[in-house]
Image (cartoon, helix red, strand yellow):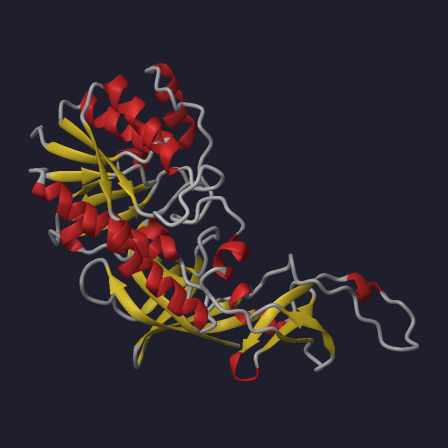
Length: 369
């Protein structure tokens, strides 16, 4: 096997630490890079980047590899955060992790690694890459651990990026990754997974957004036009949201209290023209269900769109692939689902699969019944 100089993105977490170890065990020359993507208010309370760097440095120490601290905060602000805010202000709910991968981890970081003389880069993502012998094209595959697969977040990667990228832990289950980390004495073997958005960390989201987006309160109406309360600003809500609406039950005057009175409320629509938040009662309300979506800003792993036809798709990260028909649409593509999909959210990604192969996807523009 050809030995490479490989630059590994060490995040301070266990997945990237085991990634570096596995490549080192295969005889590759491994160099670590810690990416700092966020500088505003980088305090200890929520933003753990100082602790993460210490964890990454101690991993590098145990493995006996070099580590470099690289600051991509300026690129991040320009390419990811500005877009993130634009989307929120337009009433959509973007997925910054998708943008972060496409613009920072596999662009700015990849470019930096190549300048360091790397032949490949590697990260601790749960996904796989293979070159199709028949076509010569690189394919992005789901990680083998179905509960950890991160191909959804990587669907915007292209041929040039995939040809230079390795995902060693994509071949493993998380339990195995933790076992290896403990076995070789990695200091972060038991560190819990981060769950925050890539640059916000674990801080309260509404409080964070508050600093950047102006609040314009408006009415909360139900599907019959009854006013239930006041929202704090449409940007702060996402379709399907159930918590934090600040409204109780609504009862018809004089009506007997029925079972439906206590059914939970969900955000169903954001009407920007009138600054109105529409909520509905019950998880399966028709306003929360869509059989069709249209997506824009498509990005295909192979460089060209797949042929129209039957595929699987995810409209949010943690869901099973849903059967769908891919159709052409003026600014991108459309997906038609035989089974209604729940809370399909403009701004999120619709990602297409053929079995275990992630084909790419686009940004949801509209959801239709």
